[in-house]
Image (cartoon, rainbow, N blue to C red):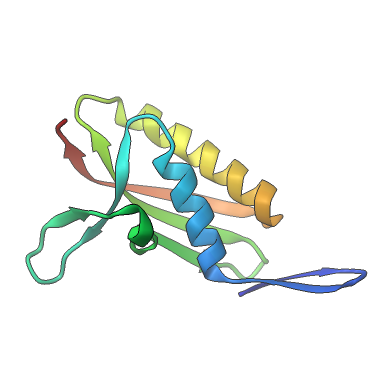
Length: 117
């Protein structure tokens, strides 16, 4: 949990808030099919439904009050992956920082699958 202090008191922001903001921003970017998760049982990558996309987002709190975000995504076949990742990084950083007021140190993107159709 991140704590922000202001003259009126403290604001506590849970990890789930950052997870939702980052996942929502990433899945709205062009070329992203959705968040993914690696299955322990069958070893395959599964595309997550919107209500469980938090499993594909990992938030780490840093000692200096910033956060780092890791995103596991599936992309459309034939897209330029470096360009999409740059777009996702910018969008996630902007959305999280403007909504929560917390600095994002890193956004790491793991492209787990390329999905046809």
